[in-house]
Length: 281
Image 1 (cartoon, rainbow, N blue to C red):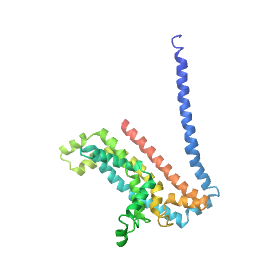
Image 2 (image 1 turned 90 degrees about the horizontal axis):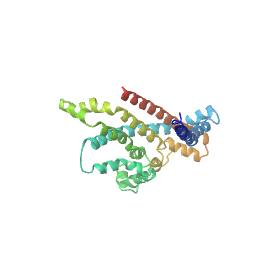
Image 3 (image 1 turned 120 degrees about the vertical axis):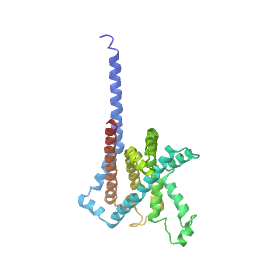
Image 4 (image 1 turned 135 degrees about the vertical axis):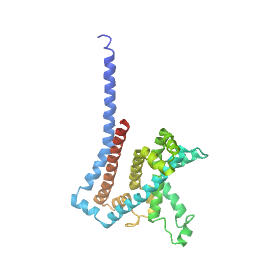
């Protein structure tokens, strides 16, 4: 009995330390995440559900929602194709410049979104490098939908690739080599071997890419020109309404973005649970 006594205070101290860390983490999340998120919905419905519906049902709001979904619908598939190709190159081939390719994939994570928007203005604006040529041929990129798409693609470029690269590195290429030895073509190997092995990471990357594409503000703000009903996405519409002191309208649009974020979180959690269940089996 006496031998076990010195260990009890240490065990109690460990439990108290663990509980303190858990409580501190929960309080931090509640203070800086849950409370601000809840306040968005409170402000959105401050004047009742009727005012909320009216704010959403306005032509400018519907145009912003449609444009946000359009930009995401173009951006995400393109980044999926790039992400798979980049991950395949980084994990299956050895070549000069491989480290540079990895650095370029991570570059959008380091560059400010505002700087990204300015780069596109410098390239495709009226006074930019290609601006006069584009104007002469009737092509408009800046202050138009193509500019929004380009800026969003740049910002969301790393998400799919960075989810796939670690997984494909850990899995190796043995199964793919066996498939090729057995006579499978490149496409058959990809769809029957590679894709099933990376499907959960790919879906996870798609979710992250889609969430960032719909919520992007900085780069899109620079290249959009804030032309209401034409180049304003949901985040830009929130800013414009807030600057106009239309707080209910601003928070109504913001609550839709928050709902999309919560939906993304729910799908992400479901995918993680499914992935862990598949791993356990």
